[in-house]
Amino acid sequence: MYRNVRKETRLARIKSDFVSNVSHEIRTPLALINMFIETLELNRIRSEEQRKEYYEIIGQETRRLAGIVNKILNFSKIDSGNRKYRFENVNLNEIAGDVLHVYKYHLESQKFSYYFEPGSDLPSVTADAEAVTDAIINLIDNAVKYSLEKKEIHIRTGIRNHFVFIEVTDKGAGIPEKAQKFVFDKFYRVSEGSLAYKGKGTGLGLSIVRHIMDAHNGAVDLESKVGLGTTFRLDFPANKEQNNQKQ
Ligand code: ADP
Image (cartoon, rainbow, N blue to C red; front, side, top):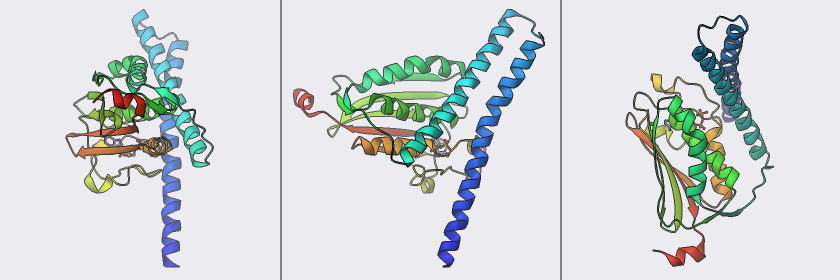
């Protein structure tokens, strides 16, 4: 009885935190878009350069909003068991390259250095390219969100123990050891002290990543040290026929 009450109180708190986090996530870009549109409308612009910058911010914030909404829709599909996967032979180097091509501008505009180290002779994997792209984007988004002064992201691919992996490493805040086993739970966010965790989020990203990896018979793992940074690794079973060629 007591346990039930405690569980319900906990759920109620998680739900209200979630609503407040999401509202905050949506309100910030909306306020920025509104402010820059008003400034443009009032013609309070000093130079063409400034005008360009304002349009860029509006574009960036609009994409951020779309990202948040996509994440929630994605999650709700997964949570209700309605996400369908289309599996085909894919190459993780190609997918990672495509993601970085699109993200390059976003990373550079936030003053991040990024390094892509594609593994050579990577076997193909059986995967849904769109879902894998979602998973990688979630990891890169987090790397950006939880980095502090050292804005550096490394992306590596390779093969280990018959699994093809992709890793995203940051030099950011890190995740306290006792929080590490919870970060893949839905709605979970590290709340522990420090400025590092001040940024808002939905607590959905990593639960989506874990679900995607389960659907691929793969796994997601992390290694992290507070103050030094974090590596997330996605492991996909390597396709057999190509596996025999190399190694
Ligand atoms: P969100 O980022 O929206 O809160 P996630 O499910 O993506 O939700 O992540 C859950 C929690 O794990 C985050 O709130 C954060 O505390 C922690 N976390 C995730 N990625 C990182 C990272 N690269 N560095 C430090 N902490 C992280």
